Length: 491
Image (cartoon, rainbow, N blue to C red; front, side, top):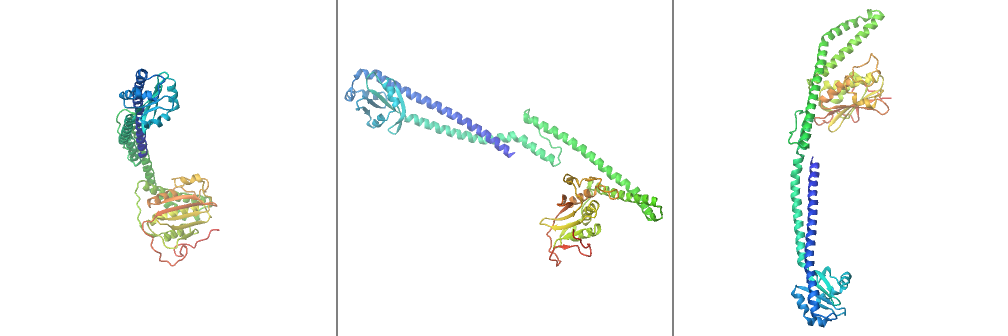
């Protein structure tokens, strides 16, 4: 918004500056032309009178300088104005008054001399005796060429004052425009700024934010359209929230209602499982399938119940100081003993929830066991300045690049036909792991490994300084024999 406001203000100031400059140049040119025209007209009338009235009566055509001095014409010419006089008789002996004008006579433009020699009045604007002057010349018949030198200093002074006044007025106009442009830009862009604020409020969750509609201009129409868009968005979000709430309640209700009959089914399946040896082969196979299906159904219902608690925001972590390496080693020993565990040199102590860590790491290990059976699995714990990470990497078939962002979606299966019915999953394990990681203030990311396989990186925040270790290990440590199995190097 500041950029638009600045550009609008600069545009307005530039427009004013261009307008003032054009007006100033036009005004100066007009006044200069009128003043010079007026001075030239007065000088021309004086020269015309001197040549046509005074000169023929008192000076013969073939007169020389002495004749001109004796005629008293120099005094007569000066009575009509304080002008310099130069009379060229064509004999290299001109009459010049004052004498300082001799260099001026010698330096007259050729065009002016040619005009005078042709019997017409001519003029030239040039410096004389270091002062701006107007020289008007002419001749009467075969008489001498007469040049009047009129001081143009008053005219130039007036033009100088005009230039200074126009420049000062232009600067004042630009300063006023600069102040006014800022005010106008803020006023014009105020509805847009309000729209930005309202959009930010909507993005933050305040769907009731609206813009005031004032006037009937384009901005008022824009504000009205914005409000209609916000109304439609609010209505859509409310419908989606209502539908989502209904879906969540439906899942929670169904899961809850299934728990009682499912508990009975599990108990009955246990009885059947205990008597499998006494059944005929065909009946035994059917009973085994029934027991397996009931177990998967129980896991599915428990997962749905857990997700429903997340949706209802009924989950809260119970943080306590934990040695992350020991916790991860214990989880690996329980869920996938053949996996290799690599720990940092010193213990990594963080504030976290051990139960949720078990769900996160355990689900990742279950995913590796199901989708990468028999492939090497490696679990690495590392610590940074502000976070710790646990990487669960396998050498299984991996997943397509376009499937990676969806691996943590509920019920998503990158390849539903990859697993057999005996080992098929519901597609909720990774979603539950991601929910637990978010609840702990962390995240999970999946990426493919060079050479094949997947690597899941769990990042968790460090809430306090990592204490110095109390072990004497000098290199990267692996799982201890008490809580973790002996790791197996990858081939």
